[in-house]
Image 1 (tube, rainbow, N blue to C red):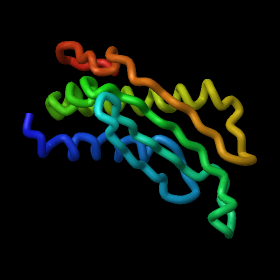
Image 2 (image 1 turned 120 degrees about the horizontal axis):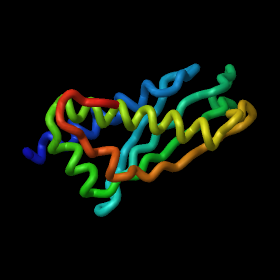
Image 3 (image 1 turned 30 degrees about the vertical axis):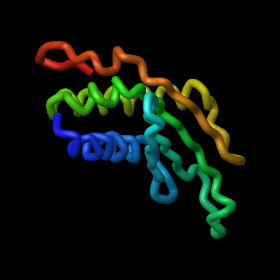
Image 4 (image 1 turned 45 degrees about the horizontal axis):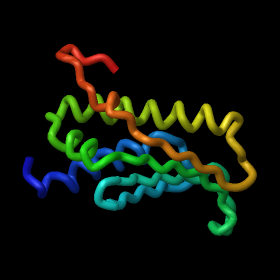
Length: 128
């Protein structure tokens, strides 16, 4: 795979995650590479106030190994779409199970380690 494509593949994941939760304001997504571990951090507003510093935000940090990110980047377009859909569902489920009911007073956060099975793509037709 062309190394130039890696930032584009990361952006695909970021864009998918930015749409997972409804937010009173635009969700914020960032990523950073720590060599053997790659993080994507998503935060969104669950309660908005006139003064943005008073907004209640929730966040989830998704942790990939370097091998997982490289494996995702090497997948074809349709396989990457399957992985992104699975990841979004996993993020929703993890947040729901750890934040039930979600707090509306103050911030909340969750961490998620990606399992290699998320990247296992069966032969067509794909199942989510």
